[in-house]
Image (tube, rainbow, N blue to C red; front, side, top):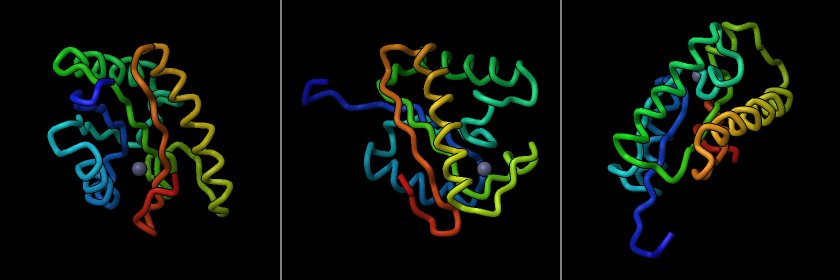
Length: 138
Ligand SMILES: [Zn+2]
C-alpha cells in the first residue's frame, strides 16, 4: 500500500450487543468510521467453520463477495469472543478460559484459511475479544 491509500476492511464479528460498542470504537479509532464494513454474524467466524447448515457458510461468503463489489477491501478482520452464545448453542461450552481461548485460536485459523481461499489478495487478521473484560486479548 502506498502512503495515500486508505485501508478499507471487512469486519466479521459476532452480533452480541455486549461486544459491539467497544469493538466498533476500536475499529473507528484504527481505520476511521467510514473505512470498514461491520456486518455482524452470530458467532463471528463460526458459520465459516461449523455452520448449522452448509448454506449458512455459502450465504456468508456470498455476502462478503457482494461487499467486495460494493467497496473493495484490502483487509478482513475476523473477531471471535469469549462467552459466545452462538457457540454455546452449538454445544461448545467452556469452564476453563484458556481452553476456550485455544478453541477460538483453532476456529479462527480455519476461518482465515476459508477466507484466504476466497479472497487470496486480501490480508486477514484474527482477533479474540474478552467480553467480561471488554478488551481484545489479541
Ligand atoms: Zn457471540
